[in-house]
Figure 1 (cartoon, rainbow, N blue to C red):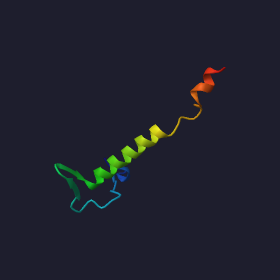
Figure 2 (figure 1 turned 60 degrees about the vertical axis):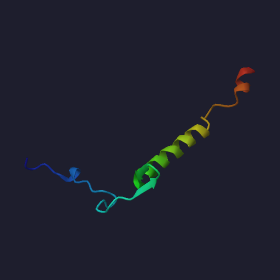
Figure 3 (figure 1 turned 90 degrees about the vertical axis):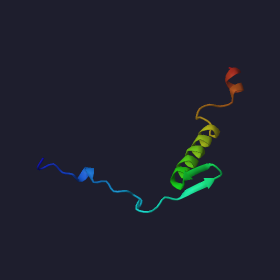
Figure 4 (figure 1 turned 135 degrees about the horizontal axis):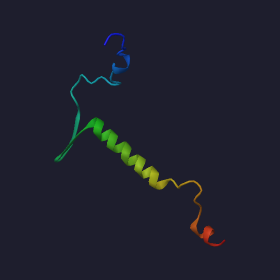
Length: 66
């Protein structure tokens, strides 16, 4: 396989992963700190999607008056 560049396959981690992981423990629940951050961001995104109104959708009463 001469002549094929391996540059696209040399991906490096954005964060140093050569250290012990940190866990958050609450009773029987044990979750890594990085996973807790991801879960928190997903919850915030879901709450924002529910709270922010869709563009172009006004009050329902105004559409029925036509």
